Length: 92
Image (cartoon, rainbow, N blue to C red; front, side, top):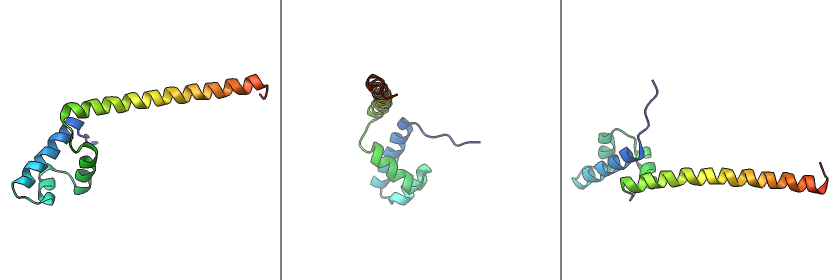
């Protein structure tokens, strides 16, 4: 059975749990182990979602998806433009 990836909101909640546990005196290694992830995953999440709140994470993911969609549209239009230029020159 494949593992379920946590949603961005769950990631932010886990990062906050680690912050609480470390402020209570636990080491980062023990706090990360308590939330059930590895240290590598924790530091990757912290780099990506560090100071964000849940609503900000949701907005970030929506903007990233929209940015990817717009990049694809621009690349498609650029390709169409190049094809039309070649056809206009008569080099087909």
